[in-house]
Image (cartoon, rainbow, N blue to C red; front, side, top):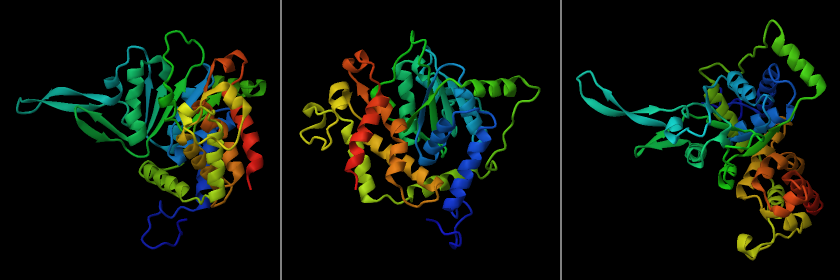
Length: 352
């Protein structure tokens, strides 16, 4: 961990475990001035950001998906852009395009005009309403933090965080995200309907004379640097070999015993529901998401090493969207949440 008295270190580099927990909780508190409820969703969203991943948010209309993301940008004092995905949206509408401009000498030349993808926090609203070609325009930005246009590569400003929303209803005219693209998102966060008491708070907050305001956690000139330092702090959390093995075993247990898919090396843990209902299990990115989420959880508890419980807490968000179910699962009304729950139960007794 960084030592606060380390010579030559900038203020951002001298952040401690206590600083991380304090900043994280303060950001949570500011977000909840606007967002009522959704405590777990907010924590998973912030965890993904500080772990360096991206998030897919699923929820019915009116549950605050867009408001949540906009509030996050305000709280962290980062640049924010929103793209409303529609069926006629083209890749160049997202990444930007080359246009002809006239110089002062009258000469014309091509110049690249950046699209809305050039920001710190990008909200892709209803991403499943765009065609696969347009959806894939995000992949290079998410994976490599860059955009290639006209043979030239343009870097994106760090930190870079993509949040895409999915509307699970009104499926007519939508294009399901390919499994390879789903795998690029560290977590999938679900926003459900608010309870009766929460709904009353929402009514009071949004129909009164004043709307709630938030206080940014960082100053504008230090936000990006501080967040990058916090992300580096997360990576320094220690992971014991036994915990790494536990995360790997969970991911392997989500994969069915199909030699055409996983080869001859089968999982040491047999889970009946997996072989019965799963076509494809979680990829190695699922294990990485488990570890990175667990590192954030450890820092929030003031620990420099992760525990088994940290892994289990992020298993639903990290694995459910990476599990492909077969027709038998849909017929028997079995969902990915059930699969992950059964896998955790099967793997947990084997840990040391």
